[in-house]
Amino acid sequence: MKELPLAEVYRLIEPGPVVLLTTRARGRANVMTMSWHMMVEFTPPTIACVVSSGDFSFAALRDTKECVIAIPAVGLAEKVVEIGNCSGRDRDKFATIWLTPLLAEGVAAPLVAECFANLECRVVDTRLVNKYNLFVLEVVKAWVDPAQPKPKTIHHVGNGAFVVDGEIVHFESNMP
Image 1 (cartoon, one colour):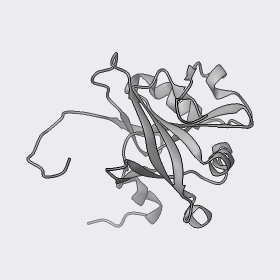
Image 2 (image 1 turned 120 degrees about the vertical axis):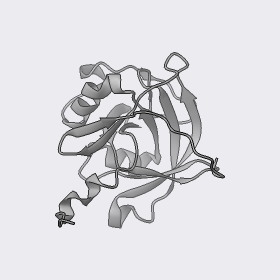
Image 3 (image 1 turned 180 degrees about the vertical axis):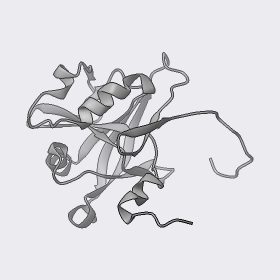
């Protein structure tokens, strides 16, 4: 074994696909790239996510208590990285990165038409926001694009490197 710098531990515990988080506050939609999230519960579907207090989306999520988690396939990887490399404080990312916002049914934040799945979410727990910037979200409506039946997701593994979903393997399991 060789010692690993503690600042690189996050690269080993990759939580899942890179997603886009959309918000709408004061009439303005925004989108950010996010990779620090995890499922918390099956039913109702509950997700925990970390949104840095330095991110433009943080105040919108805290104030409106709603968002959309849009899940992009690998074909959007360059746009996903571009979204993550700029701030909504400085530009309208939907317009300049050529994403199509769609009306959601239960939240003000927009769906992202180009993504293969969109999850409308409401914040249900903020007890860890002040300490860890961790929001707990309940998915209240879920959408999938039937035109993208077998999407491959991207997974951030640090320092600008990503892994693309690979081969699917099946094992007997008692979990849903």
